Length: 207
Image (cartoon, rainbow, N blue to C red; front, side, top):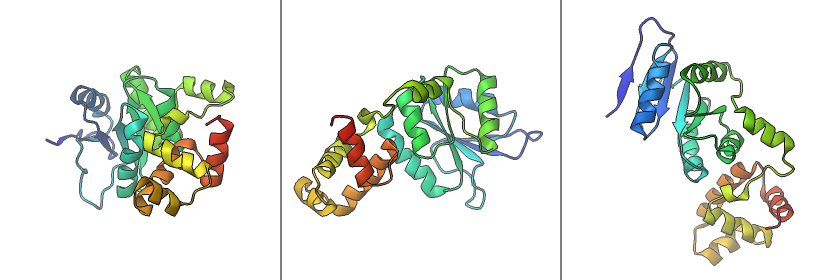
């Protein structure tokens, strides 16, 4: 069941909390309800002419990240997304930012920190945990190829071998459009723009 929490004295921002974990969703709603209207649930909020100011998307791993991000961005390409996780997952945070999220928040944050992150995201600024920034600054190779799904790794492995999309589709008994979808998702996770950059990155990482 979809629930709406609204405070008449608060700002008109509409926040969609897209979260399947009921306890987490209620906690986020409690933290946010004094500052904005909150739509809680997996269903699309509000009328089509009122997109949410931004979305808090809850996800546990990189496995479901691409699908969820694509779903939200398909509905509202210009709406900012904050990805929420129960833990400080640097691989997930990095992948989320590479895929267009405006920030990453987690259950270890206080309600005040969550509110501050929301305020920063509304202004269009990036929200990232300090650990992620240190990870990106001091790690020689911050790219985690394990963030890719097994199918994405398989298809990108064939890209490295020099196969075309049509050849990959034939070998794996997939449609060419399915191959392209997996490649687009893989490019986002790796932070590359095309098959040439992806192949180079994978070779450099010893795959």
